[in-house]
Image (cartoon, rainbow, N blue to C red):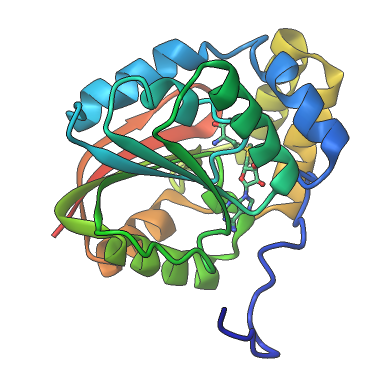
Length: 235
Ligand SMILES: C[S@@+](CC[C@H](N)C(=O)[O-])C[C@H]1O[C@@H](n2cnc3c(N)ncnc32)[C@H](O)[C@@H]1O
């Protein structure tokens, strides 16, 4: 492994919510499944990217395998990559319980993971890129492009703030309150940490970063509460 220089960003040090904790990894699925349907989310991603039995996919920031564990039933191979050994531990357990042999868990991140296999057909990343400041997001997206085949797909889902929004602070407060209602006070507190300490950015920044990393955005969808999806092709 290459040595980190003094000025390198340490992606293993939690920016906000501490996903390296075993307690967080154990509680994660119960908390998230109060407001998420993992199988439906994953099925929609598979369909949107046109993945099938010949596809190889990297799930970057895979966490407990919300996408990876489901996707492995439908594609040839999934690499679940995450900086948190605790989160990946849960992913591995779930894969074992489901008898999946084509899901490989790798400890690493956007800035440090080395994909030694042939370039993948797609990278999926759900709610992970905001752990990096913008300078490092660009480094991360350039590295992501190099892990993909030419024409490979990137599915990027994250919280992205609309630069044109009026009353952004009121909208952020309303978003946090809606999380409190749907998923409880712990996740509402995590959403506060997300905004105050993590690095979600503006739409114009994200779109510039994607373009400069060599991705063409074929689709953008903005959902409830700043949730934004970009479906991109590596040009
Ligand atoms: C909110 S969770 C999302 C997990 C999963 N993608 C999901 O949909 O449930 C964020 C994940 O990103 C991981 N993460 C944080 N920084 C990362 C980095 N630099 N590279 C890869 N993963 C990272 C965390 O360890 C955590 O598992």
